Length: 238
Image 1 (cartoon, rainbow, N blue to C red):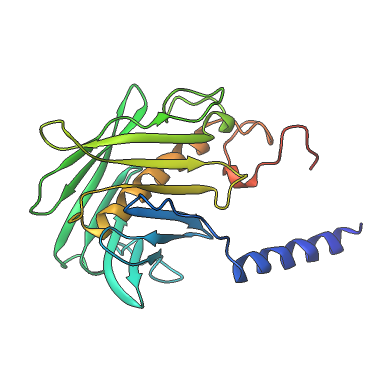
Image 2 (image 1 turned 90 degrees about the vertical axis):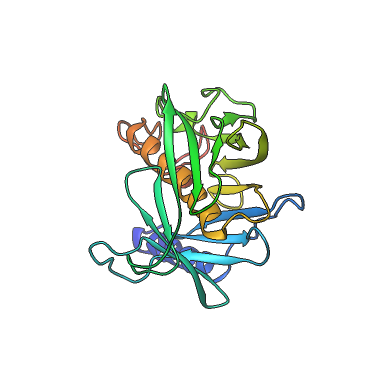
């Protein structure tokens, strides 16, 4: 097939995906669910009620501007600033002077990812490390020590705990190219947990996955990482 025709077919397929986004099933027991979709995060279920979408505020991000704005039915719920990987600040609007709603910070135990969730004026929560729950040959946890992008694929789950170490919920991420979305996040969080902070937790995990993929070996393209949604099946052809 001529190269020009290949390019045209790829463009048509991309437009089709944008017009008909994938349906991502939501577990009925979770209080929060979201997935990555074309540079934005679609929030299929918010803590409390409803759905929303987190998108960049515009074509160009102004210096110091928010990384994402979370909107529900066209109304801004909160704005999120992603700093270093795993660090997210949540405010009531895209202004730095807006009230702070909370922060999310990642820490690493020998590379393994865990999160601290700090609602403004509320009790802080902390997760265990994200442990693999699906079979696979990669590490037992989501970790920065992953050697290849194949090591990252899988389902990971972490308990959420209160200041006394008691269970307060859980968070999960599913990573891989052969599911409705390349990254799917969900979990159970306290009923009064700020919606923006739940989204910030997913963004924090996603930014850590970005870092891991960027520093791991892409087995399909040699040295240098790449997003898993661009991978092809083992034994397949380019």
